[in-house]
Length: 125
Image 1: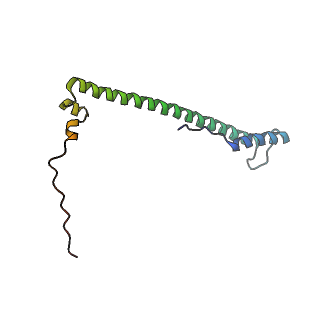
Image 2: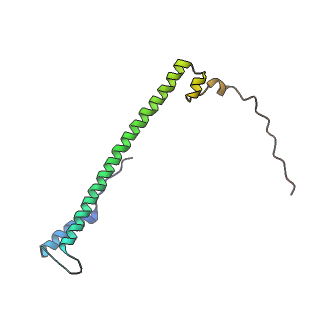
Image 3: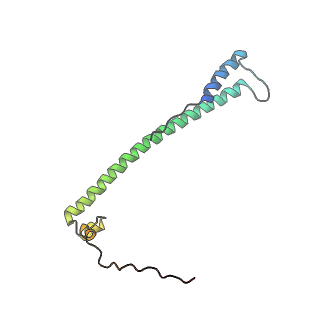
């Protein structure tokens, strides 16, 4: 799953509008805090945040790939460790069972201690 970086239609529109507002007057002040300077600052902050957001997405993707590689390496080594115990002690040994191996001979034998199922007692209504 690749995380997609994003753009901002609002940022693109605001940059175009800023250029148009500056064509009216370089330091346009419409009152009530509506200035070209304030508008430009918010555009810059938004652009910086978008860049930071996309950088984080890229780092997350890189981290995900690294984590997957490490998982595969660990899984492979786990299998090799169990195989090493099997080679040294045998697949039917207690050491193999302790290391997380399963005893095939026990799995293939049917359980002799299984009691026949009895139906649950019925209760009178």
